Length: 581
Image (cartoon, rainbow, N blue to C red; front, side, top):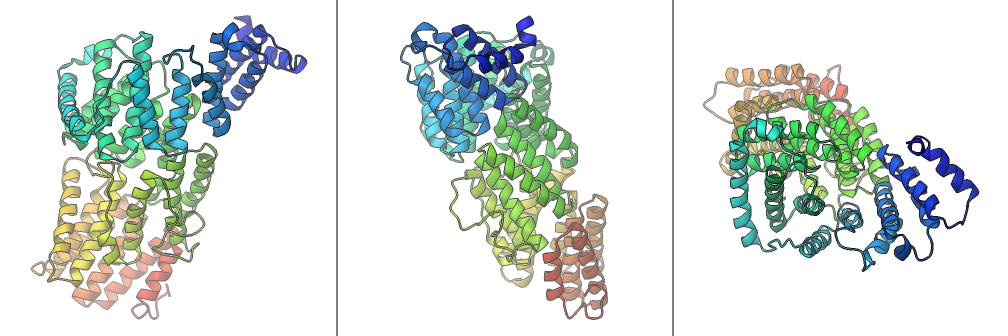
């Protein structure tokens, strides 16, 4: 107990006066110091104590003190991986994995560090998946690798698991014991990590594998008790229940179970992941995005404390960049947060998050006039023409491009954007950014349909998107109300049977609801679209001029000065003599 309270002081003293001395007891003290440093998220200090401890090991360390040596190298790999020191992490991992006398089970931490780096720092998802499958095979667990076997097993397992959850009384879930079997804990950790990587890979066969793995994780919790991945696996099950089965109520119920379970689990290492999954895919259907800011911040803080930097960075990006953008916060403050976030993500070698954040950052720069481009995502933050191995980044590009096309009036281009990444960007069970994408693509489609009244395909596609958002609104989604209002106005605007007064009322409703919700960006867009209708369909230049001026005021307040220039150029003839010119 006395050593625990002053272990840092003792280790520091020993490391100062005993340089280049081999002493197993001194190495043990450095291990204790490293473990304590890790527990308080002091990974730099953890790295230093590990390095000192390894230096104090004898030359025949793997023969004379294998347990101590294994712990030091495994902990060192974890610390260096968190810090983004790839070569040092790899050297520690290789040292452990090359030991034939050490079992696969005891090499778990080194494998986990290596696989994490492969997937999240190097974006080598398939390699990481192959290594994980090989490790699981050596532990006696065989998994299907083909599409058809995976699909059949995954769907059956998903439905069975959801039934199990629905039939299990709440008090039983609340009283589940803690899992203690070492082999089961190790295999479940490998399975959980493999499932997360398979999901992020963006390939159908791996998405099916992820589904199968997650349902097995939940079944393991119900059968054998709680472990640190129990809550996050239940969160994934909630997402699958919504995206695959389309059952909103059950998904929400399972999501609430996951939150309660996360509170009960002693370890918070997966809290960031549980938060990201639930607040990305489930709760936005019933809760405002603004209400999720605190959970995302807590998820970020938890991830950084426990070393779960991957999901800590997703929580950070969502909290500081995406939600502020979608809710109309000033672009200048968002742009500043982008710089901070990308800097930390780059330092920690979290490339997916960095790429996705830089894409939004470039859109902000374009809107602010700090780039020569408007719809091309090219400038200080990113260049869309550069090849990227980021799976989610490559799927985020067309989403943000669609928004840029919509805002800068390139409607034909916006109408043609396609996204292809399985269910990541579906409205049900996918990321909530899909709501914004559907809205902007529908606006582009309606704008094109207005110019091509004889071609029905644009109106038909717009109508489908509008119906999806409307259905989500009717189920209680508070984040799409203003989207639905403006799309209703756009739909009515191309309906020749609609009275112009009724259409005007719909546009005014969209403006009021967007403004009351604080969505200054969408209020500006509603003013702009209303002005277009007044000019093209009603011929009321004075009223159109008023709404263009209001749009300019809103865009100026948002900080979108390049968009303001775009409006002034587009409506120069209408704005003659206006105070905004």
